[in-house]
Length: 182
Length: 187
Image (cartoon, rainbow over all chains, first blue to last red; front, side, top):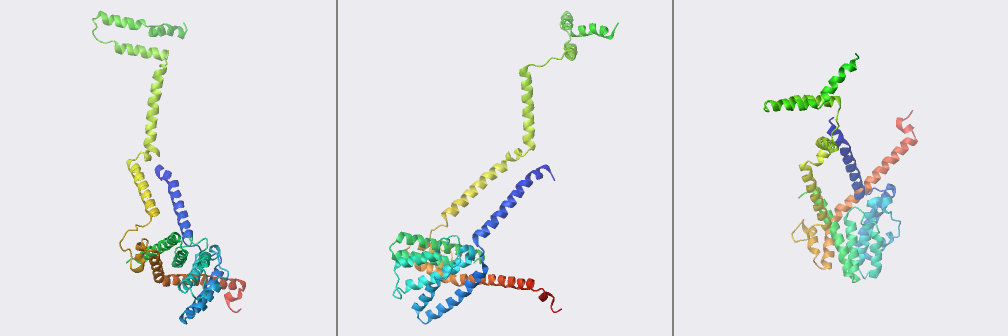
């Protein structure tokens, strides 16, 4: 091995280690694996059954029943991102998004003030929603929060929420185009 | 007579400045014909050999300066610093820095919100919705969700199914480890 090649070896090793550390960090930043997979499975099974029940209730025009079923889910113990990973947070955002959609579209059914709806939206989003891998459920819930803010005449905040949701959807579109080029 | 007695007159003769005087006088007597420089050089060499003379401080400094310059030049030509003097490295570094700055600007500023379709259907309306009223934005996002929902729901189901399969595998492995008889069948 030449003297120059020996001199460049530490630099090359450093670059290799740095690249590996970066890849691992990006992987962890993108999708957090659940720390308690058994609870994620239990949560997934529970919500699958509940979504089917809500589907049936909506088909029967029992909006109040559907809202009550989804509202009841709020009381259950949700997994945080550390325990349930990104998938648990997405499942929560899905339930809260569905609940808020039904409430906003049916304001006369079991009416709730807009301020209370905003609390529900914030409760559903949690503090960690920006860290979760971009997904449609989080984007929708962020947009629904914008709709509630609009009802509260907080138009600037509503626009911020909409733009946040649109940005998430833009990321999803770009991801879709990368995976399935036109 | 001792040996040093034989050398003494020659030492004196060699170092005696009258040698030069005599040579110059002889040259002058011959009408400055010929040259005595070679002879004088030999005389000076013999003088220096007998009694070395140190050069002046200025002359020494000059010699050391020349040596340092030469050593620096050789080191720079063969060491790692020579890489820093490569023109392509300087140009490449500047280009790399400019590219990194451009990437940062693009990432921070985000996609161009100007007109023109990016994708199909409701997804493409997102950019235009930024300048529309909030109601249109909400409707656009809801339409986008309707498009993305099936795929996202399937992805979540796959994720949960993957965790379930992983747990099932762990349970089977635990059962096998707890009861070794299942490994080899009936005894």
